[in-house]
Length: 164
Image (tube, rainbow, N blue to C red; front, side, top):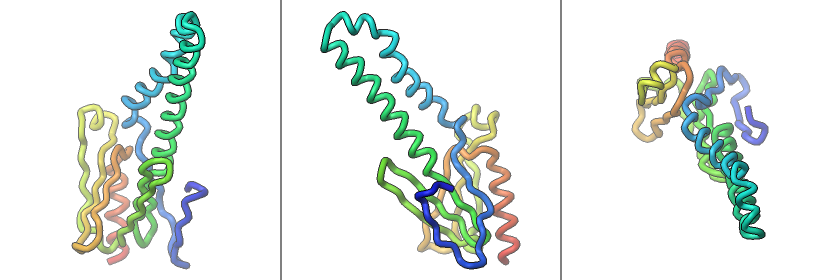
């Protein structure tokens, strides 16, 4: 678990799994980031022929691409589900500072849905996992791009049986 995400667990509660979005589901965004960072290097010498303005364009594109890559990694790494034997904790990183934390008790899980959003997702076995709760006042939570979603669904079903 991330060092700066501190969760207060009950004395008997233990973490069963930490689920993150699959890197495979991020491939289109990773390709964009790679282009954004690498393209300025292909045009380095032509940009230098424009003098200081070309150098500023090169540095601006390279630095902004690196900052964007770091932001995307930060959001990916800090967005997760922490599944304990008592509850499912949804930690959603929205940017550099914005973070939302929702939790659902395992015994209030009504259904677990899997949504495959593309043919590639079905072939590579990643999907959106969505938890429907039994009480109307708690949030339904979802995590996109979960690798092997059927295992997550089976884990939640097993935890629910143990808690009943």
